[in-house]
Image (cartoon, rainbow, N blue to C red; front, side, top):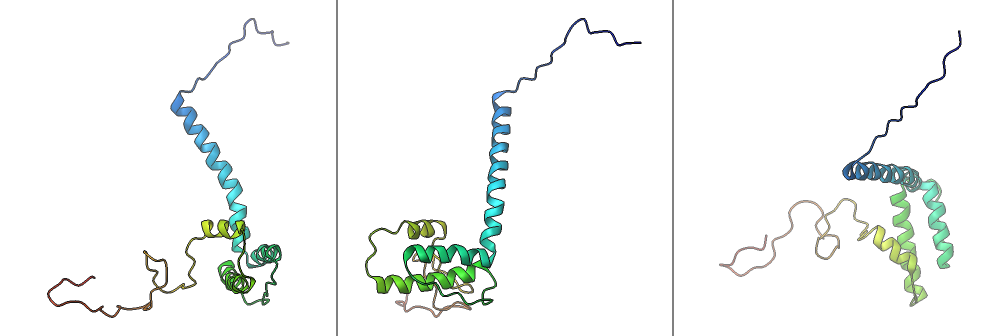
Length: 148
């Protein structure tokens, strides 16, 4: 026996408020951001991919980046070696008119001081001379409070 055709169509509509639309919009943005950044983080954490990227930057700047095969366990070690070679090249190359990639790297990775185990002075951003243990007390005038 065939099914009879419906005599009326009922349409249900769900209307979201402003706050629900914002929640969904924020969730979509977070999902898209996650889909973009996850491969980038995986790429930057791989030492061989970082070697390729930093070698390309070195070629862009015009200096030779010497990579020792198998010497780097992480992308940070490779970046530290590249930064040392880049700074040495900049000292010999003289004044560089505009350095857009250096500005981007300085913005993305601020105050890399190559002191992984020590303390960093929060005011100057430079490594502290005594990375472990207490520092020597500075000279002070008797009767005044110590600066630490």
